[in-house]
Image 1: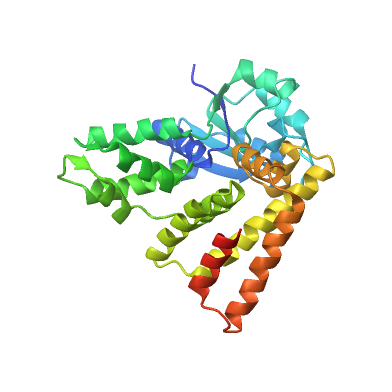
Image 2: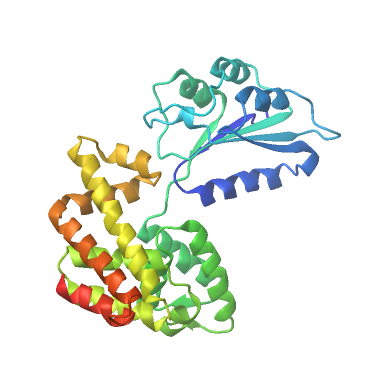
Length: 322
């Protein structure tokens, strides 16, 4: 019997999208028999009414319901739409055999105590799509290169992982570029990776912030000079630094009010892994120090714009003085 209901959940949106596309390809569904509904914008009844209609000149149709937040274990907040979940319960108990219903949930965990979860567990397939860790991405990258008849130097692999961060989508895009660039070579070295892989400016500025919090100005200066070497504008770096410190101050304030990591995740709409580091960073530095750094950065911004100091040297002075 063909599957009727599939659930994909997790923080890796690219992985979820890939899984959905695999099913579309596997079932050879054309555009006339494929519909997608965003449950943040459309009532669930509309999607389920569609799921109950027969395919158009085909044996199979697919209905995708994105952003099924009500299935997650994240503390529920008032949503734009109030969904009639009883209608979904009825559908799960009697699904349309010609329809494959796909629900996607952009959260790290589902509410396993809910009636919906129990029904979906018995009537459908539930797959987790979690963000890849450093080792997972490293092993994946080595496999991609090995399939193309290449290997990669350990130091080059480290640079690749550092530049793509935890983004599966970015890793996929950058690997395609690297495979094309290194075509015909046996070994991928650091120079190749540094030449072709895009540097993520925000992640690098995040590294600068972390180095400053860990009282490692030399490391922060090294990352900063690396960004300058790649022609990044010091004013853009300054702007992101200010945003990071303001973010840290906001997290600090939330923690002081008694909120926790999950609350921070919801407030900033970030992954649980990102929220973890945001909370850890906020906890390890005094609020007064964050405010002091912010004042210094805002003063530098004024001095640069008024022509009192060169923008490149201004940030160097800030890093060395922290």
